Image (cartoon, rainbow, N blue to C red; front, side):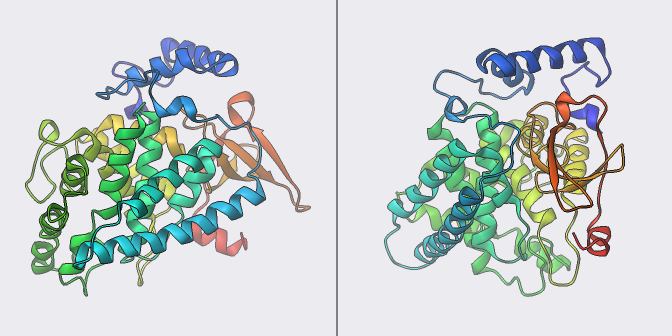
Length: 365
């Protein structure tokens, strides 16, 4: 599955692959411009990293732990933005005027947090929540989608459009009967038909106001389309789906997979990544968008607990962009202390597996 995320004709063990990753590591140490251009070209995205790309404003964090002060700040801000998103949904569903100032508050806050610490921003965005909380889900997937879009070299204007489309895409869910559904998972054929109505309802609601960018409306309408034509509401194929909607689709699927249903255990983040990689190999999801997901959260997503080849347990702290399987980790020692390792710089250390939720509960982690 891992090779499916590489460029056509490249294997994880090929000489060209190893040479390229070695060059990227050296470039990363001395500057970001040259390797960013190469990495973006590999994604086959319609954008390339240009001088105007927001990525240039994002500082690559050192292999360090998160700032406790910043972590608390992000958590509080996320709670505030969840309430703001709820207000925006009420405005869309009611007769009150849409507050673009509130929407701008969400996008501006996201930009600010990504600049300070992208990995911490992503961690807060992918923390599982109970399915059915449409406002929180929209905020989470907008955060992840913005991080992915940043890795693809989008400018702030496009990232803001992506954020807005993700943020409000579930407004139509409030208008349909979702009592028996698990998030976007219908249980019966009738519920499936009901579910497929909500993108069109959302689109109509957004069209009642001229405040929303047209691109954001299209994203909200096409999030559930799939590149192989298996999605809804129109069964569009890859060349008929807006590129930003392809990014949003991957972010939405990941957040849905790792979120909690009332009667089941959520999918482990690593398993969710595996499913999306497989989906890309089958043509369901855009491969460039899935690569951007890996660049944003790594193969073993930030926040996951993993086992290393020497037997240690570690928490994934940070990503290493295209070095998907070698993140920055915090090794947990028996005495309660921890030690941070950048696995890209330690050839003797590697992740051998992600620790399942049930095992974590047994270990009291």
